[in-house]
Each structure stands twice: as C-alpha cells, then as structure tokens.
Length: 398
Image (cartoon, rainbow, N blue to C red; front, side, top):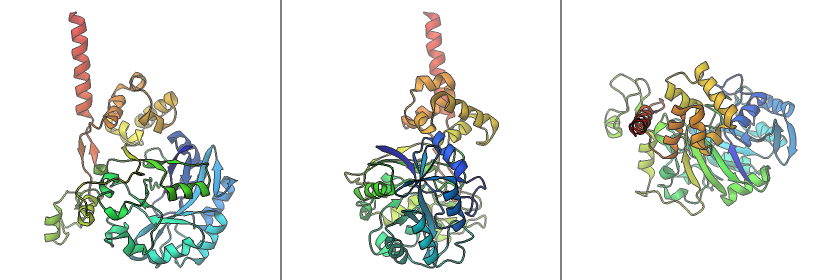
C-alpha cells in the first residue's frame, strides 16, 4: 500500500510552536492535507506522551490513531555541536525509557531536547531500543549535520538509517554527494503549527506492507520510498548564501572574504546550495536505482496567497482554500491529480499556478539568509489570459 507520510513535526511543547499543535488539531488537518501517517514529534517529552495516550487509540505495533489518521512516535534531538537528529521510536514505553536515559537539562520543558551526546552516542543509545535515526535537515547551515561534518560517517561512525533533506535541498542536490548513494532520503515538513501551509508541506510516499512501525522500518531499510514531495529548493530560506539581517543574497566567496559579515552589519549564513558544492564529489547527480522521483510542489494555501497577493492566513486565502477542498477533497490530491479543467471551473488563476508546478514553468526569486524565496505567477497568468483573449477574438471573427 502507498502511504503519504510526514514524519517530522513538533508539538505544542516545542519552542516557537503553536499552542494549537495538539493531536485533536493535527489529525483532522492531516486528513484534509491527504496524509495517512504522521510523526508525533517531541516523542521524548513526558507531557506530550501523556497527551498522545489520552488523545489516540493504540492500534498496535507502534501506531496511535485518531480520526482516520495514524501516528508513529518521532522526535528531534539537538545533540553536540547543535546538530539535529530525527529519531523514529517503536512505542511509548520505549520512548519513556529513552527519555529517562537521555542526558538533557531541558527534556521535561522543551519538546526538542538538547543533549551533549554526539551522533555516535545517540545512534548507540537509540539502536538499543530498535529505533531509527538519521540527520534532520542534513544540509541546513544552523543545525544540519553537514554544517559541522564533511562526511556523514564522521558524525555517526556507523551508517544511520536515513537522511532527511530539509526544505532547501532535493535529491538532485543530495545525489551529488556519492557517500549518500546507499541512503533513503526523507522529506518532511518540520511543522510547528497544524495549519495547511505548514503541515505536510514536504512529505514522502512510501510503499508499506501495512501501517505499523515494523513495516515502516522495513520500508526504510529496503528503501521503498517511491517519491519525495517538497519545495523547490530555491524557495528554501537557506538555499542561497545571504544576510540574516537584510536578507541580501551574497556571493559566497565575497562573503568569506568579508568574514561572513554583511555591509549592513548583519551575519551572513552559508547557503545549502554552496555547502553542497563544497562537499559534492560529483558534478551531476547520480541517482541509485532505488531512488524515487522528487516532485516539487508548494502548499495550496501558499499558492493561493501568492496568486492573490494576500496573507496566507487571511479570510480570502483560507476561504478559497476551503472552497477547493470542499470541491475536490484532500489538498495533496488537488495539487497532484485533480484534472486542471475541473480546477479551472472553481478558480482559474489558481489552476494556472498549479499547472505551472506540474509543467515546471515557474519564475522564482530564490531564498537565503532566513527568508523564503518567492514565485511570480503573474507572467503565467497573463500569458494564459492573453491566449484565451486571442482564442475568443478568433472565434468572434469567425
């Protein structure tokens, strides 16, 4: 069975997360999104584990269910050197045991615990309990594994279970690093709120025997991830090298000459694009035979927001989003599968934007320094309108 899975998010207990990030909100929004399997996030926080138990029904083999959505226990841990690690956990009893063993001063207060353990030590700890582990958003400049290491084996020594790409990278970028040819790639949202422009903004389509922890582990081991869905890397807020204060994009070589200080006084952050160029040993990506396709997409509410130049949480955008959901069902289906002529009947401008993703005809201003990139849909919309006007004029003349 093919399952849409978002395996990395956070609860209301994580710093900078919405208070609405609770199971009773995550489950229905996941269903509207089109997700089948969702990571709980924050799976080592005692209070969050209590809420999971109270809010779900245990379906067995590590799966906790609510409102036709299944959850698997996951957590992100900040280890030594501020490197973030994603861990997938078999069940709540094991999560509580690991939480007790994990050295961390904030594990009872913050959903994402900080620990002095290295990647090697974390891998050894969680492998004792049959957990899976890999670097979270591996290439990002603040907390990604490759910010500190040139090789994944320098971080873990042994082979971890997967690599999470992060919003600023895709498989074409990551498969220029030959040491990653044997790793399955995950693409997840890292969502801090349950709203449709955050939850499932990146996800995986995985072939599972059934929805269970055992099946998920086998799928990752056997590399049966059929597709990764996520942002175009240019849109990621750390894709290009840029200033974290004024957000100006800066040539990386010039940035290094200026000791990563911008003329405005701000700090320059090395972009994912440049960092991968530093560690890549291949000029072009070489995809292993098991590697699934990477499909670029953007949350529907963000597409609507850009098309109508309105805030993503405004009544205008949310109303149009809801209208499309009411008309065609889950958001993922709309973005990928709903016939364009049907979408056109409901919202012709959004239809043009969705088609721009499907046929890869986007005009993008890249992101960097902590600011997301943007898309100019106006050219495609104007082009479509002019074509329609010309066709109508031709028909009238005829």
